[in-house]
Amino acid sequence: VRHGFAGRDSGLITITASEQQGVITVQVANDGSQPPLDFDPSKTTGLGMRIIHRLVTSDLGGSFVIAPGHPGAIAKITLQRGENGR
Image (cartoon, rainbow, N blue to C red):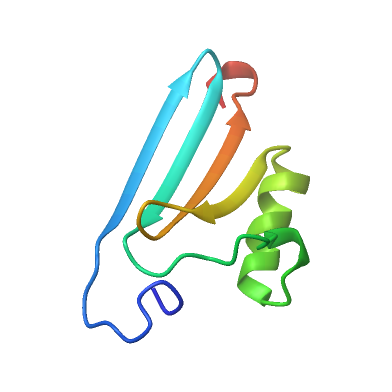
């Protein structure tokens, strides 16, 4: 919210989750500002982003990307469903 809606009083955030063939995807999109084209969450200095990136990639074995949306930005987490549906 702080980055995506800077200079705005309101905006739209959409959260979706799905599972297809054991692959879980969670996506958070906004209609605010786009991230820079070369934005890499693994190279950010922000503590929150570093925590999320490490949790998803190292602890859960998934992927985490942030990319420009149309409009706004999209943060996407992709995980392989584990044994026993976890």
